[in-house]
Length: 324
Image (cartoon, rainbow, N blue to C red):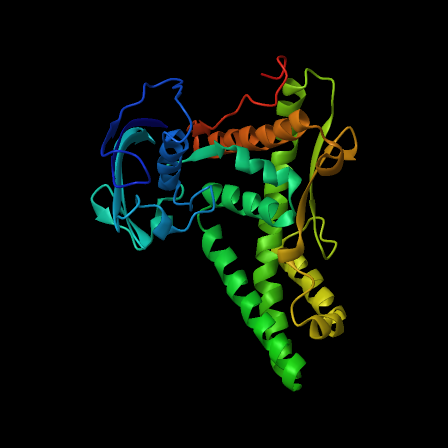
């Protein structure tokens, strides 16, 4: 995939104008706060995902502005294409002249991977960011996963609301049975998808890390399920989740929320058999994230036949010379 031109108007602190990268490697350099990361963020939005910096859509127009527009000409899947994103409180998108129902419909049309210093949270922080990494990466491989994950999220919210009400007022046991079934069905699909992705990711990431470390360190990636799921189809995952929900009912009622399920799972990363989060140096942790991100790019290329665009922000810092 090749970005031919990006037109910007009203986005962050970027002046209205155009960016026309060369087909190969492009290096952006300059002082702090000049907009280098903002430019990468603008390109990333064309994947259909949200800001990789965690910003809300309403925060993306420049100071004092209510609207921003981004238009990108790019080559993908043996054709020249154009996409436009308009941001007014929320994002809307047009692809090759056709309005899309949501901006997320761009997923799978333009593919990219992004690394930024904030992604070190994949190693250093809790499991929520690691789950988001798996989900976002799989959405680019399988755009239909977006709706499957959304269905699980809605079901989880409904079950949690019922648990909270039951904790306060009592009753609701039969209704909870229904939500257990729905959560097992929707959650089983999420667990299966994540397990499939992690098993494909693991050997690729290990190979990339081996190259970064010069073969001096071993790297392992694994999916840790809160219900012990370690493979099998969505029906098997759903059955395991349903059993776990029934076993945890008293704990869930006491807590007022669901204590087991895909929302409690994690992506495990280990260096030389030890957790990267607790024992990895700064350089090892950065190498861990780079290995995950470059493996994500490799899987995208394998699935689509297209080399995704790589957006690397401040990629060299905290790496020794050999890793650089």
